[in-house]
Length: 287
Image (cartoon, rainbow, N blue to C red):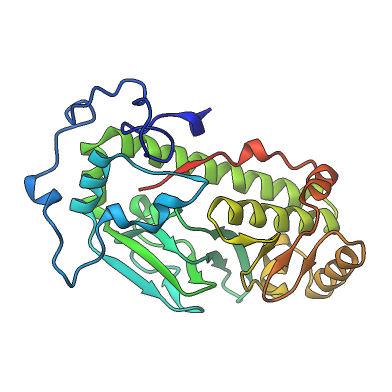
């Protein structure tokens, strides 16, 4: 499985251990070495160095090795802070930047001409945002912060140089794209084939699992402010039906979901009920 692969600098968390397959210890094995300035310290007013990245300690993410960190540090263009409720990207706007989520949770949605909205995905720490616009030229969707968020920024033209120079990054981008396609496929199956209770339960459990991967779950609770309206727009339900489904799941002792947090007291019980396969959420690389 990909989650067990080496990263050219040790184990899945980049903390020592045997090197990954094919890694020789020579940066040339993964592309030319970065310019000497890439490893120079950043100015005091600049963003923190990549070795202090908050993603490195998260249990469900695969940290890049030291050579890869040097490349990232050279090609990134700083950080972006987005306040809760603000847009990071707007539908129809030019897509000249890509982002890696460092902290916070964001929601991806597409608006129809008449104002109706389809929520497409929820983005967690480590996720890559804006890749679609890197090829299409402008954003086909918007990305809005559900919580105060912090992101690492890559100009689109420099990001293409990065993945060209470092084939491992190109592979990671393809892998991340494949995982997002799989997640969208699972959501599509839920919307098309599951009754309302199972749709809501599947979404709640998927969010909890992603929250556990990224260190956001405490005592079986994920504190992310997702409204019933947003859930309805993601699952193709009316707001009234969504509210009734929330009440049914709460009374059954399965899921307690309000505007501030999701609480699932017995994760295994809900996994068994809806047939949730945790193998579909392996450890993820990030850039």
